Length: 281
Ligand code: GUN
Image 1 (cartoon, protein in one colour):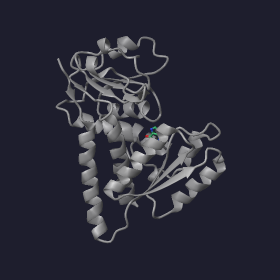
Image 2 (cartoon, rainbow, N blue to C red; image 1 turned 120 degrees about the vertical axis):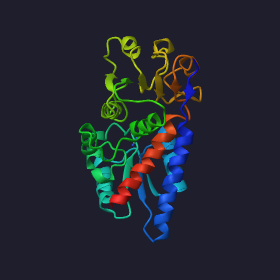
Image 3 (tube, rainbow, N blue to C red; image 1 turned 30 degrees about the horizontal axis):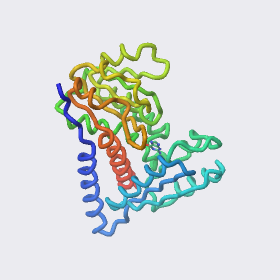
């Protein structure tokens, strides 16, 4: 078997075109453009690249981006004060603080300070709680994008065994909730999982979000499975997923490439969330 490639780059481009079209229609009527504030702290190269991609995507669709490049020694109070200001601003619909943060800043305090209605990352306990109750509001971008990709496949999710590897607040936990909402039987694996191979071998849908290559072996993949690779590992300057694409594609029915799979969808869903927040505002 050779898997079909799930083209996230193409679907993301289509979504951006739809978003651009909606914004253009509204702008012609004199409505103000959607606004997204992106806060980047320090000089992490990967974070700088992600923020640049987000800014360019905003520009493409007509979202006004306000990028705040802050020094790594900003105090927590200064950052929270900035977020309070942005919460109040009528020209800003969405607020995103790029993670990870410097260790002297409490990530949870930052997440909880963002107005849930402007939380386009979907990380605020209100938005995650709504997802847990299957009443989603703003949904975390990467899992939301993966659900959109799964929706393009000729596949019924209901009743499937889904295994998510990696239990982060950003990807793994909300991914498990999304799959549960789609009526999959969900297993969420993490660093203390006793027998990862045994869990993965049962997966009709496998979502790899470990952030490490070479842990999941292609031989563990169930023949005919859907493989979603969230990994973004830079190895000798080359971007690689958590899964060895070529060998995994010999067993899977569908598989996402890295790059060009999940990554572009994360950015597209950020735009979609910003649009939702703007419509409400
Ligand atoms: N760092 C890695 N992924 C993300 C994301 O989706 N949102 C934010 N804010 N930071 C991240």
